[in-house]
Length: 203
Image 1 (tube, rainbow, N blue to C red):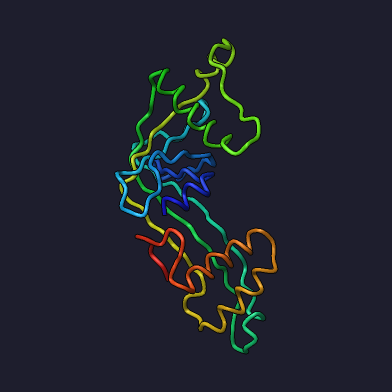
Image 2: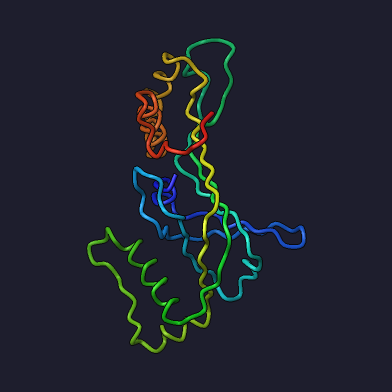
């Protein structure tokens, strides 16, 4: 599940205040490396615009959407089947802590930039000697989310026969990038090697 978060880190931050749900679409940085073993308590780092009223509460839910694809019943080549959707997703519930120390905020932003610039040929780095950039810190708020519950879902046609699943994989493999990613997950699950399977709920 941590690997799903790491590979699909642009997520939804959801909070509820006075009975009103709020959502912000933001990039997260997973502050816990993915391993084959149970990790230490994972933490998510993020920032929002200073004018954003969210988050204004202590607890939150972060939702991360992995690969997903429409599944046509015509692919089964059998009667009595219906359309469905295969997908991978992770919900992370935790407590929020606002980070107000300027040096800590800079480190979070440096970490965020480094995360998303890592595979670029000429990676950008923040020049904190630039007074204008430094002043922009007053326009954002940084947070740490300590995750206390992870819930994963991998709906990959597990309730269908091996023959049907193979037909779905074949059709998805001929589709676009997202279709092919779902096919990859289904193929891995077909042979008991579902990526990031440990601890995930599956149905």
